[in-house]
Length: 364
Image (cartoon, rainbow, N blue to C red; front, side):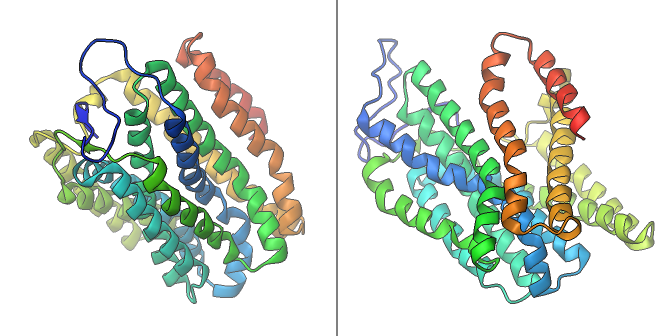
């Protein structure tokens, strides 16, 4: 996505005018389009937490090793992280609605592959493809909201709805997973995406306008490859150390990942249009915020995974009961996700973050 986006007038009746005259407010089509964009946004959040409850059932069926089970959980998020920016640039080039529909179709196909996987390796691959499809959905939805709502207040409301729907998806993941697993096999947790995507593909050409950027960024697949080559070996090494302790293979994998990380950073500093602007890290507030976010997400994700496994494997709860037990914290997460931006407009963001961490400490 670029800062100087212009819609393709041959494809859309809406336009972002550079004239300083008052901008037009959104009409019924734009608001219906926002409601439609809520569907893939919910799916993105849902897929991050849906598997937490399904893991014992699929482990009993596919018999993955402990390492494979972790990759089944992690492959989705890593592929989103690796391809997110590049997919945004691709949407600028080919059209944001087109990328949304391509990503949605790929998401449905990958969901069916995951649902009917016959081995742990097949499921890991399907989850990785799901992540790449998710990386196409996320920037497309945000970019379309930017273009559909020229009025600042309406655009801010649109972004607020997007954030709320993403949080709702994460909150619903354990509950929806528990209901599905109570009545169906573990693959049903993936198939829930198929009818949602079908509705999106049917209505998107009617409700969502197409937009092309006037100046699209450069597609840099080499940087994408380097970023993944830096992340994946490090994560593999950490997982192996946690399982078997220090050894040549995990230490070597971490060292290899760090080498690729150095190459990635040097490449970003050299490029005129980098995948990641390294100068951002010179801002202390930005760097500290990222570190806090990293540890916060690790704590939340790890705790949620641990608790869902404990409720089923130790406490002996059914998936439905375990999912209902996860309901209160999930709803609290949704409420916090909606209210935190409002509070941060009135209170220094640092105090909001510190307060949230303080509230979470007794629970952990």
